[in-house]
Image (cartoon, rainbow, N blue to C red; front, side, top):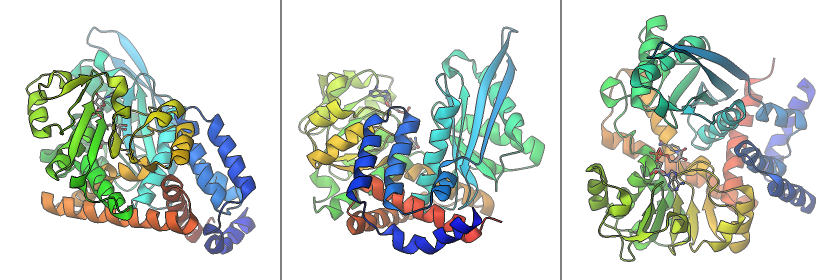
Length: 446
Ligand code: NAD
């Protein structure tokens, strides 16, 4: 083991630039065709990048295998006096580059496989963004809509008690994810601090008034906008304001991206949410739409947009298509029907490996999720730094630093994309794998 890793360290430099041979491409394509679940999809994309590097199998296994998986049961007395038991997980995938970092998801379909795959994705995302973290993820199998706020708080506090020995400001720093928000993070911070002393840096995504960061709420949508700007520049497609956009999902990420693109002069010609979709060829007034929705009205009832079947959102003609809702929406059939120049993956995992192949064949550029939505974890990192400094940065400062991080990361993956002649997604995984491997090898294995 030790010997092959030494060999690996020597081989790294030359191997990284090598193009995939015919056989490797065929193998990787056949892996792509058989992938199905989210976990498999992540590993399929990752293995495709690994195929282009010449790492020994032992190192590959080391990079793919989580360091620690913790499963716990949270026993909670509900408001009606009944006892409920919830399964919870924390998977720590890799910490070669820094403390483990990753969100906490509350969802009825969360299982260990899911959390494992998401933890791995965080390792690659923090590496692509070049922030000094590894990757982790947590989840509780629960439908939070069925719990009262008090029950949710109790469950969160039980979770902290159960995992408190493996998390910490310099060990593993959770954050919000699906169905967890700033309030949940505040409970988390409070409970952890009861056991370990004042520790605002143990979680990120806290309320701004409770050690959170200015700019965090908009960070993923803003980062997506910076990412699009860089991609357009690299492809010589013009400026943000010259484009027509279609956005699936009008939640935190989709609505912020829409707002910023609209402010930059772009035309957002169609948007959707879980309940409906609207379109306007001349561009929707996003400011008015957000005011409409914040007054409690539905997206579909916005008067200045023509109603559209939400299933049709992805095929509306545009320059830039932004899936910003859920995973798996661009499979092979949908990929064949898209009418856009580029797909910008603001959501996690919107394109399946099979869909990705079709897009490649059609010459549609895909800006991958592990880069595009990395603005969220980047500003989480800024929040953590502010917590360590006991200092609050101004919002312009946060946004400026985010811009720099998104731009630098784009340049790194664009360079690999050009030099190795690989799709941007593969380039992103190659950049991440090189950074993690370099850290693993230089830290040593004894
Ligand atoms: P959110 O819950 O705020 O919004 C999700 C939006 O998608 C809502 O408008 C919802 O109505 C819509 N939606 C759900 N199902 C849909 C469907 N079937 N068709 C159309 N629209 C649908 O979530 P968010 O925070 O905006 O996250 C969106 C995506 O971005 C997710 O994939 C998430 O994992 C990813 N992401 C978010 C962040 C972040 O900082 N919020 C960071 C990284 C990645």
